[in-house]
Length: 394
Ligand SMILES: *Cc1c(COP(=O)(O)O)cnc(C)c1O
Image 1 (cartoon, rainbow, N blue to C red):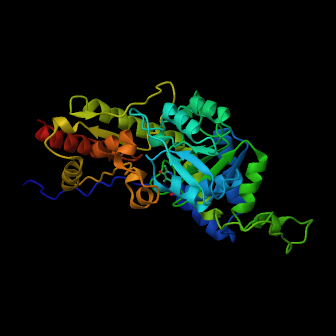
Image 2 (image 1 turned 90 degrees about the horizontal axis):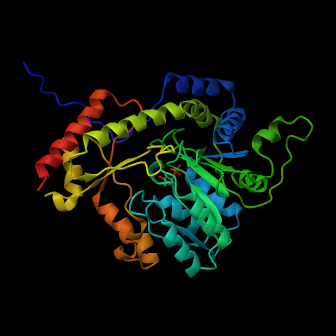
Image 3 (image 1 turned 90 degrees about the vertical axis):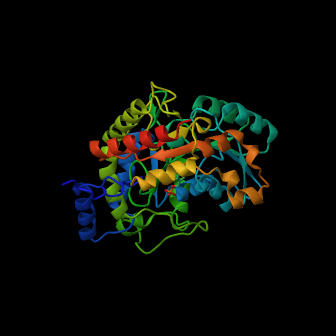
């Protein structure tokens, strides 16, 4: 008799949590110290070593890290910050937290990273702009040499949104510390996770100190120092600014230390899945994602396929619906910010203002790509994508 039970729904993303993470959290829970403490400090040291950047500041999200980064470089009301519309809203919302204005710059049609030629034009058109936030989309590094040249020519600071980019390399070096501050995310779907969490890294001690102060209420020493250094009064502290509550807990850091040790093997697993997809989809009406710099590492946080809609009888939305019917989760990265009501209405943006972002959005779909996917699961994705597209090919 044939087994007609449908296979379980295959999620778009799934965190790879092992017994080491479970044991590490239990150990922290039993230690009596739950919030920012010795494990967070150790995670920061591990992370700084991993990216070869001297200062790492652990926070409770990448959004918090981006906010702290912009505050530390002095972004304030009325300032302008250049960034991409092809990103998650967090990248631009932090600019608004500080009363500044994001200036969106369209992306390149191959890697969907901020287009250096258009960035240079925007920098000339907005000479009063203070900073650039490039996003290493999907785990592919931006053209940092061009971005840093533009930054130097126009006295712009650079805050890298590396939420997708662990571990990504640029020019042979792990991403982190090319711009003034680089911010990573450990959200549940990202390449390594602490549930919620983030890390801001910098080569500048002054910027690191400011972020350390501002992540915890503007208190000039962190809780750990206050309660553990023996030569100072344990009750005394100074508030030097109205800071935020952005510190990481030791429970999250316990998970992070385990995950960081696996970042390399996770990347290899994701890359192997991307290679299998790319081979399997060679003859379908799609544009496959390529590593734009094969000599460098692509983190493959996302596998973004573009449908060739003029060769298909179905839209991207129908494709996603058919995948769901086949029991497979997918996603869209991203709905460009200029189409979102808040950004569209606040800055009077039109769909055609960023034609590349618009065109990519209308065709793109992100497929499951996570460490721990079985052969059978990868094959299920391949056969569903192939049969839906072959059936809809015109
Ligand atoms: C996920 C994400 C963020 C925000 O990360 P959190 O840790 O959830 O705050 C920022 N930028 C990009 C591009 C992201 O994908």
